[in-house]
Length: 88
Image (tube, rainbow, N blue to C red; front, top):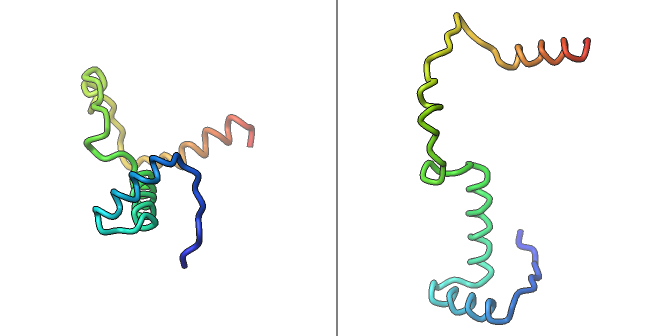
């Protein structure tokens, strides 16, 4: 279901956006809607691998230095720690 949205933008931005939309064979509404969808998808999925900053070398050297036996349930451990902290 489509709903009307009113935006307040600078006049030259609107004019240029309309020209761009026409060049792309889209309406301005369609262009804006697709842009919002893209923004929301990126936010939902998090940064792409390209956008992620590489980890520092000193951090990478820590890989494998900690060992644990068996299964580790971090949620269970967190629950225990919080219960102990707050006396529950």
